[in-house]
Image (cartoon, rainbow, N blue to C red; front, side, top):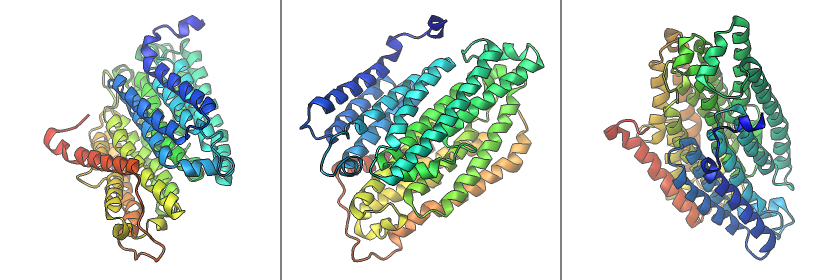
Length: 482
C-alpha cells in the first residue's frame, strides 16, 4: 500500500527540493558550530543559494515563484536582523535566531514538492512542511506579545483548516478508492451513481475549504489581518506571497480533475464554477471593505491580500479545456509577488528607522526620500491596477476571463460578478492611494528625517519597479506575457 502511494516519484524528480533541504541543514550546522558568524549572513547565504535553485525550476512556474519569494524574504530578513535579534532573545545576543533564516527554506522545499504532486498524499506532505515552518515563523518573536498572539491564532485556525483538508481527502478516497487526482478517475466515479457523485462533490468542497485558508479567501480569511500585523515583517511578507503561491498551486491541482474537458463533459463542473464565483465575490467585498478603514500598513496589506485573492479566483472560471491549467494565474501571482514584496521592503525600513508600521509613518517621504517614494508609488499603483504597470494587465486578465467565460450561466456571471469586480477595483484605488497621498500631500514634521536605504533594499526596490513597468508596457507590443 505504502509503495503504491509513491509510484511515479523518483529522487531525481525532487533534486531541487533535496538541495533546499540540504542547504537548510548546512545553514543549521553553521548556526550551531560557527558561533562567531553573524547570523544575518546566514540569511544572505541562504538567499543567494535559494535563488540559484530557480535555474532548475524554469519549467515549474509555481515552484519557481515560491523560490523567488523565499529568496526575497531572506534578503528582507538580512536588513531586519537587529529587530529579529532584539525581539526573539535577550537584547544583544544572537542565540537561537539563526533558525529564522532556515525555516523559510524548508517551507519553500515543501511548496516545491507540493507543486509536483499527482495525489493527495504528496500534496498533504508538502503542504504540512510549509505549514509547520510557518507556525514557528509567525510566533518567532517570543518576547513580543503581538507575535505570540498571532502565532497562537495561526496555529489554531491552521489546525482546523488542516483537519478540513484531511476530511476532504478521506471523502475523496472513500468515493474513488484512490488518492490519485485524475480527470479519468473523477469522471468514472461520477458515472457510478448519484450517491457516489454527491459524495465526491462533498470531498471537493472540503478540499477547497482547506485551500481557501492558504489563499486567504472567504470563509477562511479571518486569520489574515491579525496574523499579518502580529508576525515579524519578513514572516508577514513570506505568508503574503509564498503561502499564497502555495495555496493557488494547491487549488490548481485540486480543480484540474474537475474543471478539465472531461469534467465539463459530464456536467458537474458548473457546480464548482458557481461556488468559485460566489467565493470570489465575497472575498472581493470583504477584502476591500476591510482595507478601507485600516491605518496600520501591515493590516492594510493583509486585507489587500484578501482582495487580490478575490481577483485571482475568477481566473479559474474557464470550463471545458482539455488541459486545464488557469494560464493567467502565474502571471497575476508574479506581479502581485513583486509589488507586495517591494512594499514590505519599504515598510521594513520605515519600521526600523521611524519605529512605526502605521501609514502615518510614511508621511512626507516624497519630500525627504523622493526616489523611495517613487518606488512605493509604482508598487501601490500596480496593486491598484493602474495602466502601464503589471497590475493593470493582471487585473485585466481577470475581467477578460469573466467576460469570456463559457459554460455555466455566463449571462448570470456578467450580471453580478462583473459589476462587483469593477466596484471593488475602484475601491482599491482609495486605500492604495491613501499611502501615496500620505507621502506627497502631508507636511514633514521636525522628526521626519530622510531614511537611509541599505544597498540590498535599494536594489530590490529598483528591480521591482523595473519589473512592474516592463510587465505594464511590454504586453502593449508583444501581447500576453503568459
